[in-house]
Length: 65
Image (cartoon, rainbow, N blue to C red; front, side, top):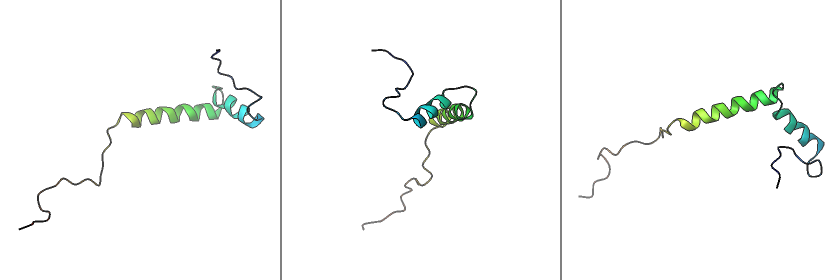
């Protein structure tokens, strides 16, 4: 099976083919936007998740005496 990076015109519309070509052309704004979005997502993935609504239990909760 070939591993080409092309899309078939039999299964995609002309607009889809054009969009794909724009996203893979280094001289296009869509390509530059995709690159910056991927870099931003990669940066965010490396940061640890912090839940700002989590409060540690300090023992001041209900008391069943």
